[in-house]
Length: 257
Image 1 (cartoon, rainbow, N blue to C red):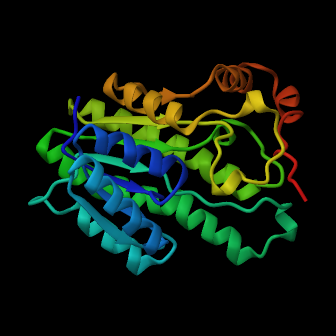
Image 2: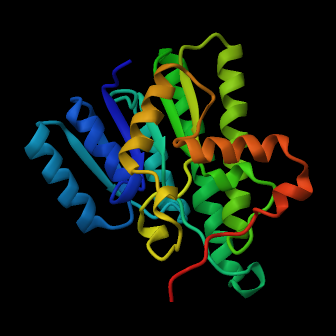
C-alpha cells in the first residue's frame, strides 16, 4: 500500500530521518515533528529539493502538553489527511533508577507512552472514519523483556507501547477496518540515544533495515516486526524461557566513558 501523507515524530535524526528519506523517495508528502527546528527545516528543504514532495514541519517537544496538542490537531485535520503515522520519538535515562531525577523519568513516560497514546487516538479517529491508513509504533526489544536495568523507565514505557499497539490493532480489526497497526521492536540502532553504547558490531541493525522491514510489516498488517535475526531470537527467548533465565539478560549495554 502506498501512502499520500505521513506524520513522523522524532524525525530530525536516526530512524525518524530514515523513514522520512524512504517515504519521500516514494513520493509521499510528509509532516515532520521533532524538537530541533534547525534540523527539521534543513531536512525538509533537502527532501523537497531531492524528491519534489510537500514537507511540513512542526517543531514540538512531545513532553509539553500544548505542543503535543498541536501535533494532535494536525492529525485530526480531515482536509489534509495523514494516512500514515510513525510514532518514533523516544527518550530515556541510562542510569540506575534511584540515580535519576524523577522529573526526568516522568518526561520519559510523557514522550514514550503518553504522546503515542494521544497521537494514536487522534490518528485513528480520522483513519477509521476514512477506512484508510496505517500506524507504525516504534518500541524496542527492551519492551519485550520483563526487566531492563539502568534504563528502567525507558523499558517500562516501551512495554506499555507494545501493549497499547497490539490492543488497538485488535480493536481496529474487530471493527472490520482496513487501518493497519504494526508494532516494531528494534534492538541497537545507531541514533543519538545510542552513541555511547558499547556493543559488538554484529549487534547493530542499520536504520534503513528497520524502516524497510517496518513498512513491509505494515503492508502485510503484521502485529509485530523485530528487525534482525539476533533480536528475533532475543524476543523469542524472552517469551519462552523461564523468567529467572530472562532476568539474567535484563541489563542495558555498558557505556563509553
